[in-house]
Length: 270
Image (cartoon, rainbow, N blue to C red; front, side, top):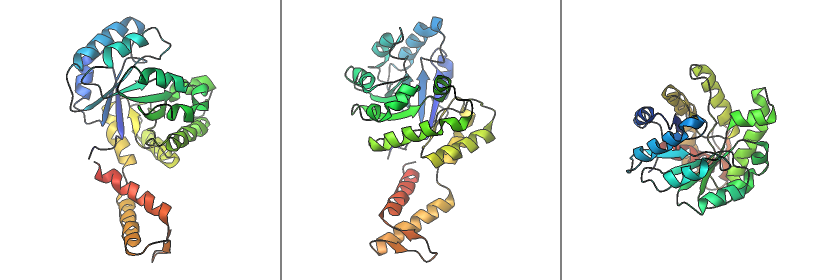
């Protein structure tokens, strides 16, 4: 069973030695970034270095974040990486409409992931999430979204976060991963932020440094207590059909059973 990705490690495409290290660090998905992490005068080099690195199949899951579709480098990015044997997915930044997804999907056979980073992208969240069968996920790019909205307090993004979680679910997609926590030294803050994201319905998180990976995984994997409770629910549902109350007073029905099954499946997939 393929593990559900909980950690998505971003690495700059113009630093192939860093990418090589990232591929061995244990992240569920390594995302080679040709966009924000690469200066304009390094775009061509980053593209060529990525094409060389991914010219053969990789055992690790590797995605490439291309430049935004309206940017002058996007078309060259797509031509260079879409057919590479080592690429398993494309991450599309600053998606604002379903047509953005369809345009890329018709030219590639890869799994696509849309990043919503503007107010317009949030407004069209469900249309984007349901745009094409090749689209496998949506998530937020919070730094750009924060700037677009003029939001200063972190809580000001919670409505947008919930909007994306709901859009993904409504479109039949996996729960979205959280956006990056930009301070790589603030591991306590990362853990607290992950706990909040989990409460909103996110599953997993993007990272920008390997030291963030175990914090994210620990935050999103079920605790021993959650596993024990899920197993109790499944056992009770197996022995007796329909809604019922457990000996400790907890009421369970079909929705509670489904949630317990999701908890167990997350662990079993890893």
